Image 1: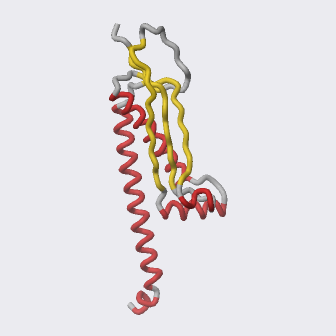
Image 2: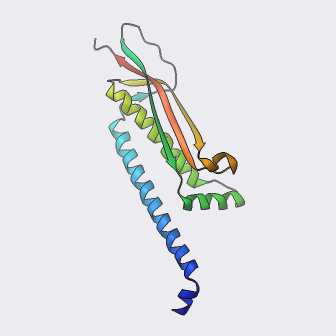
Image 3: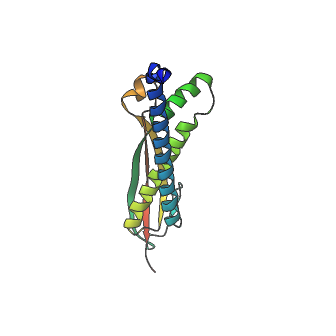
Length: 158
């Protein structure tokens, strides 16, 4: 018991790191489940990056739609990324962060298009950027912003 009291700071640090890792993993898995469910619901809506052309009498409405999201990285993943930067290699913690942000932005864009009655989105573009106080100063990622935008097409019913 005396060893525990002598190393109380280390013990608290380990407990907090474990708690942070567990909470971050749980939140990420929950977000992925939500993304997968919503992707299945919107699977039939076509999204293409190419410009499309249709006869003018077939298009009832063409309107800009967008979806944006900001996803923050947790401290445990940031610590792993710092270690990975020292030793080199893929930074998987950032890869999952960017993947979640991009997929969520596309889903939000599709949901906006669905609300307008669109059947497809053409000329879709996707952009990501890092934001946060430390993103530019210390070359660290604080949060990822992703925005997806395109032209929602509502076709005539003839």
